[in-house]
Amino acid sequence: MRLPDFFILGAPKCGTTSLYSYLRPHPSLFLCYPKEPNYYCTDVPVIRHLTERDAYQALFEAAPNGALLGDASASNLYSVAAVPRIIADNPVAKFIVCIRDPVDMFVSYHNQLLFDARESIADIEAAWRASRNRFGNSDEIHPQNYAYVCGTGRQVVRLLQNADRGNVHFILFNELRDDPRNVYASVLRFLDVK
Image (cartoon, rainbow, N blue to C red):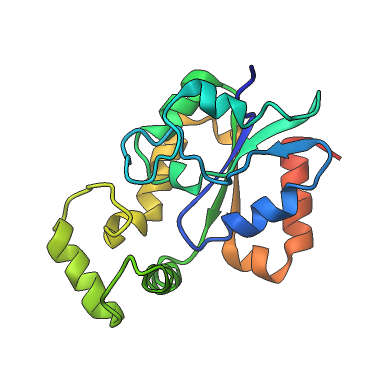
């Protein structure tokens, strides 16, 4: 059984779901369903849906021969454990990283948590302060630790300390939103598929 060739990473609300939906129909790619099994996020048990390797590999059983396998678990970016574990399994894994202005991302992410009833504080500044009270200055990895989840700068630095720079492709949310065709083409070039 094979493991993924590429991973779509990113902070919440940075376009990973849109990119996943654009790439999924491509005949040379096979992206698993569900989109975010979070198998490699061993340090974030609250979001990890699959813990057994066999169950994870089963997500790729239907892949056609020769297709590149992909996993779009965005949280692999903020998990400390994920990227080193991915590279241990596949040293040439490729990473597509969706990023966004952290303030815009926080606003959108907070709204999503409100909508999902995972956040009860509607005022955005009060929610940020409450997160600081919940987690202080800690790097506790939890979806409601806004400072940690939205700290994409240090997450990208950590990724680049682990992964070969030639195996990392960045996508800015604004570019994906404004010019999805060009971003799609750049991803296909990065993955070396037609």
